[in-house]
Length: 516
Ligand SMILES: *[C@@H]1O[C@H](CO)[C@@H](O)[C@H](O)[C@H]1NC(C)=O
Image 1 (cartoon, protein in one colour):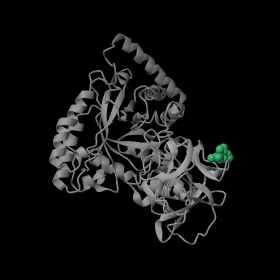
Image 2 (cartoon, helix red, strand yellow):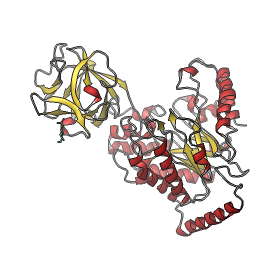
Image 3 (tube, rainbow, N blue to C red):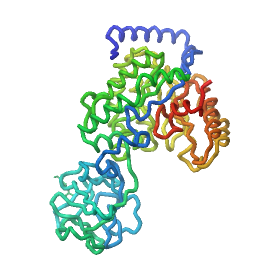
Image 4 (tube, rainbow, N blue to C red):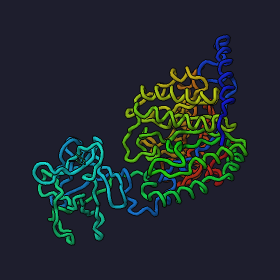
């Protein structure tokens, strides 16, 4: 454990003041993020999927969860078999449920909150929860509650002969039924042995999207089982030998994604389980032993800054915003206090991949300012990394802001995928794209007296199922060449992964990639 002692903190304050005085005399020395000639040039791998779980990287961790296709955030469409219509939250929420839609879209999509393996809340597109109301005639379902109550808790009972077919039981003990298109009611008490097409309580539930992150895993297993599984994962997925391997193969740093709940260890709020902080302490030790740096990366921010599984999201909504800034700064303060004086600390990244337009530029700048100051309380010169927004955002939008913050860095993620453009391109075509387009993009954001630039995530995995070893080698080499010119350096996604081409370790061991 490394805590900056008070005298260290004082020392830093003095250094900072001297530094400020020097800046007055020689303002050209260190304006903006660029630290003179001494560029760090990190070559790193992300320790992705370690302290923040991602299902696609470690799918077997999810295997033993009962009903593991119904985890938190699973999106479903529900069709009345008898009416052959989908259930809809009128206006996306705020009013009644109907059973009147031919084609399911947003208003017909329900997100599960899992209470246990068979009990759930349903959240609709305007973020309201479904519940039943006893006002008026019948027991009508409406979607208008901010929080799920007892009346919003439902059992899903699957037909063992036809996994699509379900009955849904409300907390009054009765089952949902759609007798007509105009309402869904919680008042069916008929025969449950039959699953006839004409039965108004028989529905088809279609899973259209699912999330597999740390929230889903821990809530899926429950505290006791999740604690065991995560502890084992933290202790075995990354060990000190991995640091030796990285060092021997040309890396000088690791980027470590962490979740906001780490600051509450050993008592993180449920469903998260304790232990990731000790694992992180170990990583700092191993980094020190192997002469490597740690780039700490707040990957999952409170409320979720991008709705992705890797943000710790429960249901895919982006709920990070102004109301979460203080809590998020507290996480940075915690990390900076604990590791700010550690000789292996290379940088602190304030937030990974905020997504526009859900996260606004104003909120983000306000947070980055406060987070930056929190780090500076403990260390005047450690690099502070600001991630560019993904989505509808200009890649230069943070440059002038960051230029005013000393030792600041902008993180950009370059993946030749997530767009049809890249689908099926071979290695040569991808390499050309990297040499032409990526190097131009890098040049455009690399400004004199601006922040340093970090390609904090990239991979040599191709968006092409028919690629040869040569294809991968070309693509990898192009990226090593081009991202090697990024002023702060780069980090491969990821060090290990169930999918081979995403694994730095596998790529090195199998001669797909070699660092110069
Ligand atoms: C469900 O119950 C809660 C409180 O118990 C209440 O506030 C809410 O309005 C109820 N929901 C509906 C749809 O009536």
